[in-house]
Length: 545
Image 1 (cartoon, rainbow, N blue to C red):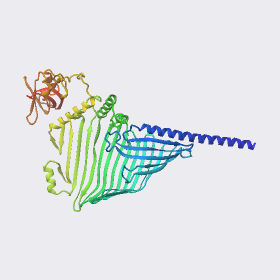
Image 2: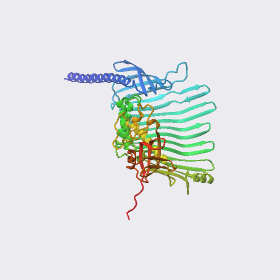
Image 3: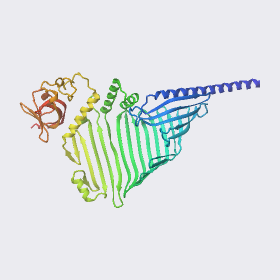
Image 4: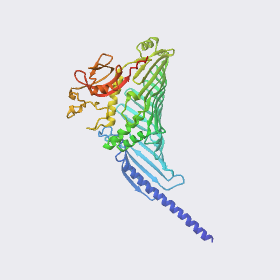
């Protein structure tokens, strides 16, 4: 009876061992297939490619090597195309253990450039694959030193770790010191770090930071240098910010503390951004677009713009000065692109754009004469603490330091930008029918037009090659036989009030209204065709008595 129990137990254990070993063999075989598929997947990638894979398979282990190429790989120019070309060798043990599916170690060696015997990049590490599917490894390097002409440099060992699973990535690297000397110059960087934590590689959601604890040069020193970014998704919107910061700086008798510049972009339409990211990935950084890809790209970009977003400098701060004087700087700039009432409509920056900002300067780093000069020149206004400069732009009106700036060129510039943006986004087709009510709005003629006269959609149009594109913002006035738009400098454009163009202008611009337009005119400055037309301000109606 006891022998039967022992035999059954041994058989059970044997079955488990066979299943364990069989599963381990399957895991190893599957890993080899996945690696081969990954190599094939990167064959046409523009940033990272794996090539020349050679694998040697064993029952419970394997080894192999491949080539790693990093750079601007879709660039037709050889110069700068390859940033890193390295040989990677690896060994895999895929016997399943309680805490890992498999374990591996690897080495990366950058071969020396042809006809040189200089230093090469060498990294190595060991890691494994968890039951969750996460792949992890540590990263280590040796000392690297080099010399070029009269300049030498030295990088102390780097240590770090990475982990990736699906669309996530965790990366940490730390280097203790980098020095470079030669040509009468020196630089010393201490405590170099890189931290990356991404939850969505496609959209770049997550955090990253590059830091340097101390910086030393021949003319000064600094500490706590930091470049960081964070991108998050809130509902159907994406918010991102980048911070450039320096804890302290001393150079040539001057000092600065707590310098910070933060740039943010908030409210980007996530669906449109994801579409753009997918197109960029599929077309290798938008370098290989088909007609259908091009259409999808323009549609998604238009969607992002029409949904609105805000951007600007959300933080500008720091203290600067010398031994005798010190001043503080604080400011911010915000640019809002309001959502378009018609999500499929044309971009209208003059209506959608709003911006404001201010910068304050306090302290005694500037003397009273310098402060007075800045105020008299209109760059800032005086405050009890120092100086403040501010502006606000909305609905075509620009205010700077509480003064209204009447600058027609702003509207004209925005209208020109509208024209360029919409021409790009809409990808107009030859022979397309004009939109209702805009039969007399046309684009600028080009030298390639086969029959320029046919492009002028107004009966009174002159040959296109004789027309001049003119931008103007001014007041409109009408008479029985003529109508005029006149700007602040006295320049005028005129049109016939009973013509198609006259009726189109009159439908948007009444007597005394201020309007901005871009038009094609003949030698007598008569408007022959409209490219853009917007009402800037309307004369209020007289009160009823």
